[in-house]
Length: 175
Image (cartoon, rainbow, N blue to C red; front, top):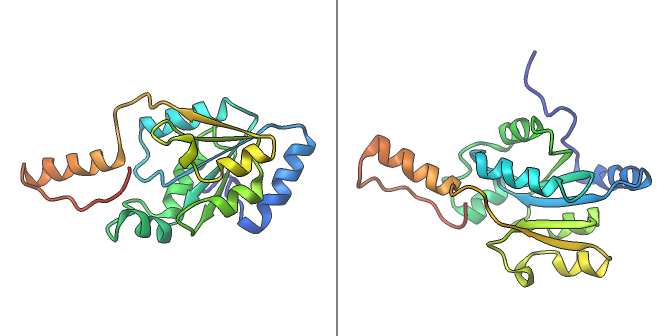
């Protein structure tokens, strides 16, 4: 038996009908997004807290294509099919939608979440889709990080462990 997405991977074309079903069940829809490359404790804690704001967590997952644009040609470390499998194993994640754009605005406008969640490292005025969510009677939540860990930090540590103090690790952007 192979690994699967547990039926949590939903196409962009189908997400609107999934959300309509959940809202018909009076579920509070939460949305967050990110790369989630090299899943770590900080990611898991963040996703659990995001899910606590509602009944159904939609995770907009950056595709490999969009990560290369955001973080550079050496990323992602873990390809999207494998990231989907790992993330779908988390009980706090109800639904995953891959997106190719560098920002999730189109997906947010398709989902129309009740709650939009991002890390506290983002100012609310800079959160993509915050204006749209609030205009549609939703709220924006910013989550402080529980763990002092990042994907970029992990990559740098691995480089240092295997290649020494002067290891050069090519990364860009936020982890």
